[in-house]
Image (cartoon, rainbow, N blue to C red; front, side, top):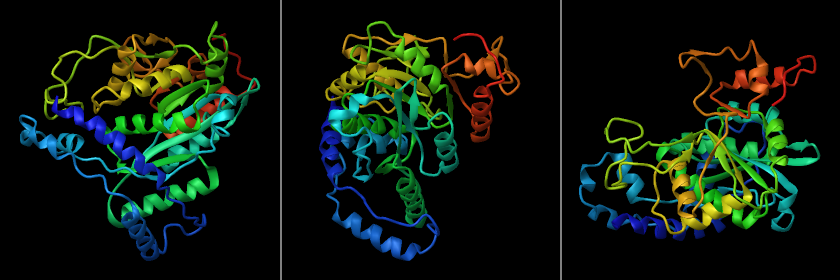
Length: 364
């Protein structure tokens, strides 16, 4: 298949990641002095090896009739690492000390979301003497000075929090799979023995205390056997309408059905399964929808997702129609693992409410 060369291109580009972007900046006034920043940024760009376009993609039947974002997905990759945290898990040898690694997909401009998560469910802390650690994974947004401003914002956050991995590819829906592939490459190198992972978006509410309790209670699984659980989508397939956000042309997938997969808003993985997905990704053509791609990798390994009733990727509804007022009844969330989606202010208030010692709720 012509698009099979995409995988080779990705694996080649990953080697660029040794060129790490380190530049200390003060937390104050990081939106100023963009002229000097532009010079620094352009100098770094000139130093990076270039990842050339996959020109063979243009030979795919009907390539020139595809929308521009589909062409870009097939045609071009360029992603050196801008920000890195190789010591996040204490080094490969100590990474088993991390019980739950929160892997949070976040766009550069989502500063408010990241700040709220750092203060709420994504706090790095011990729960029942088990470590929770946090990483935000991001691409780049905008162009010119806007791109430099957002990159400078991320570096300021990095200097204070040491929790961002950023690659220099355009932040877009169709590049979410790149985040997964590159993160798993990073994990294999830096956190190979992490017990469990939450893979989720920055607009979910995750009851991470309850997650630790659930994961710690799994019989016979300390992260060394299969776990891939969340809200499972079954009997679905590619959207063929060209105007739809999820449009997938037959040049990318001929089959009209997807394998079962967990919704990408948030799901739990064991460290074992994360490394299995990484291994399978080396021989599977890249699919632009990241949660579908993860399901494909799991199926190729002869494994399957499991449905967890406490993961609400599609949100909470009454009789499939009216949304539940979560702020009026925090016990609903306290007895779940994850709900999608929340505004930053809602996350902050909900975290405060479910941690109120005066609120009594039933068991999980």
